[in-house]
Image (cartoon, one colour):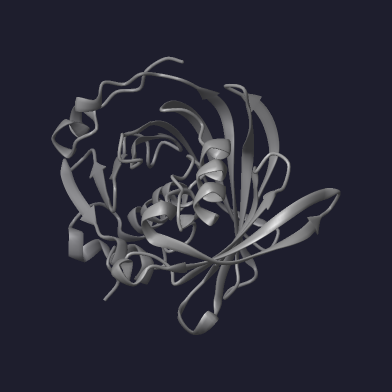
Length: 272
């Protein structure tokens, strides 16, 4: 039974809600919000990559999320998000859906491995576990939320070229103690000079590729070059792909107390 089946969680029109959940997760899962890294000299390398791709401790953004089948735009959402990075390098995020009207007012909270979703009409809080996310059709873009230091260890590294850029490939395997929390393997490509993430390939059990995320259109932000766009390609259904694009980036120091499920109802959109 699908974890986000409308009848199970009891709200709204089933298709619209499933579609919006799919979007929400896509975003947060795609780890564009900067991942926390460090593993076993791969430890040094991973922590440097972490620092290079982190957008700051208090990040605010507006993002457009588009989902395509072939060349046809199937869905489009706009969100505003606020994130903070705690001392344990866990990313906490509050996401507000702002468009289209059908999803406006929906909110999500991401705390470590858990995601909470709030639907305005019912005021129901729904908790999604990592396993539900991995098993559901929403398992789409975890490239943004993965905390590599907690979940993965580097197995091999190699040099590569992507377009005109010199790059480094890092193959990573899920740590035994984190089994079930994330995908079994990730292959990451970073630019050698800046350590900016260029591509992430996600693999399921048995080494089957699930999806590829390509990062691009970098722009200066907080003294770093930050990727403004991620294109996610489904390896199992190749005609399906999504584009996540920052429309605006900023910094807002949202009080940490706000990043809790009990406060989600009252969470608001700050100017930045």
